Amino acid sequence: MCASAAAIPLVYLVVRTSEAGLAELLDTLLRPRVLQLTLNSVLLAASVTVSCLILGTASAWVLTRVRLPAGRALLIVAALPLAVPSYLAAYGWLVWLPALNGFWAAWFVMTAVCTPYVTLPVAAALRGASGDLEAVARTLGRGPLGAFRAATWPQIRPAAISGALLVCLYSLSDFGLVSMLRFQTLTWGINAAYGASFDRNQAALLALVLVVLALIVVAGERKSRGQVERAGGRSTLPVHRAGRWLAPLLALILLAPVAGIVVPLVGLVSRLLDAATLRAVDVPRLLEAVGATLGLALAAALVAAVLALPIAALAARYRGRLVATIEAVGFLGHGLPGIVVGLSLVFFALAAVPALYQTSVVLVFAYVVLFMPRAIGSMRSGIAAVPGSLTDVSRMLGHSPLVTWWRVTARLALPGIGVGALLVAISVMKELPATLLLRPTGISTLSTELWSRTSVFEFGGAAPYAAALVVLAAVPTVLLSGIRGVAKEKS
Image (tube, rainbow, N blue to C red; front, side):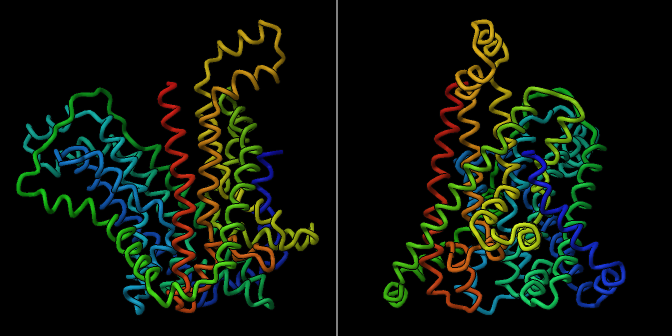
């Protein structure tokens, strides 16, 4: 039941598009405008994925294979763009360059925001890779790049491909950044078609096209990952001196953090400290947005934790095709863009439960579908780390399965459960497209207030909401670091 809830948006979207009929489907798909939007989405996603793959892999290699001052701190800095929503980064750049727009602007800012998705897993893979093969390749006459391509790349390719998958899915599903930078993609077209109430079938058809693209990307990633050759053995990794290349190498590492977080935040602070902005702050409205954001995040984190826990426990303790299927359905939201989930739940609520249309219940459910996979992964790891012998001892002492779960498994897995809930809360605070479609009338979050003001170029009015969003999202991030620290101490 918990897993099937995640499939509701996709199933209903397919049903809705099938009702339109084959003739209308073909007519919509063959329209020049739809083809252009699809081409724009594919072009942006492919370009951002390639640039992030190159920049992220190069940065990871420098961070792990070159002796740098404060290398660990530089790795943390390289990950910082992940904490900034893409639309907030776009807002920061628009503060400095209001005329910034189009494909190249969207590609540049999106690359800066998404590069850590590749840098972090590749850096971890490089630390576990064997250095012997690369040394052998060098003795056979290969240059540094040739040796890396022949010996090291096959070992880190799975991590690089996984990171590229996240980048591609993020680029396909993004709505806020491309809207602010005025580059029209499928997500923009879905929102525009939905806003035109006379043509909502077109919105559903465009959403299905976006889902098909996402599924093609996921299938391609799995096929590529399955063809990877894995090298065995480990040795001390070769570490090079930076020497005269120190400045260029630091510039390479800092390119994404500077473009993705430093420039936007400096722009945000400059607007926030402007006297006119401070005088124009609507404090009651700002507090209402903070309260709505916090309330929705807490509610979604709680519901996601409740629904994810049985799936995580099943996947951690049992194997089999049925268990794998249940877990895969639970992860379905990972491949669904937020605007698609929002649109499908609009249709579902109007048709099945009209009383819940434009209520917080449907909005929280959308958050759960989108972000429950993040909770499942963390909770599964936490539960799997609990020794089965402890539960066996508890059962031998006469405790029931429920009591054993509560007193043994749940307590020891609590850090993992807490991390999963906090990951959902952080994601909810930054989510935009589904919130725009499903929010109750009269309710605004920090992300929707920020988007509505920047969409009409009220950068000064958007600054307080952007600042509040950064501060509010930092709270669970700090808690997340604390929980992970506790988990490491226990282990």
